[in-house]
Amino acid sequence: MAAAEAEIARHGADASLEEIARRAGVGSATLHRHFPSRQALLEAVFHDRVELLCARAREMHDRPDAGNALLEWLQAVAAYGATTRGLARSLLDGGREAGPPRDSTCEAMLIEAGGELLRLAAETGAVRPDVSIIDLLTLVNAISLATEGSTGAAGEAARLLRLAVEGVRTTTR
Image (cartoon, rainbow, N blue to C red; front, side, top):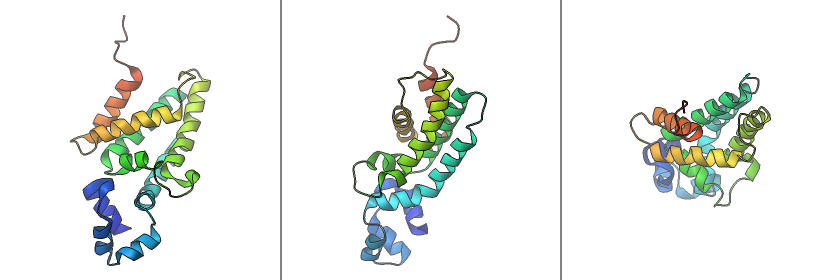
């Protein structure tokens, strides 16, 4: 896992599986026995960090302003995606490749955690009822991809998400 994490940090989701196996001191066949697909390997690399984001969402359930809690969590997801090479791409590719059952993927974990925050925000009228968690995570993922690897990526991703969510209008009309 350490070799995979290092290679993915260097080269993103397209890191060479052969190079990962070489750096881990195993053969390519051994790597493929443990991780039958690139997506399975990416899921394993990102699982623990995504779980931390999900735990953060659960901690935010009791916040008095559900709309702000949702935005803060989405900004954290965007910042993490922008500063973690390969994560945003992995989430995009997750639905296209056979792999772990849907409910155990990083994408499914984020959908469940964020979906609950969205439900709470919608109940208070802080979010339009036609907005889905898939809509919001797609937006976050696009912003993460656009800012990944740039100087100040986390701050830039959070700023762009805030701009997208709050709009471009001034508060005074």
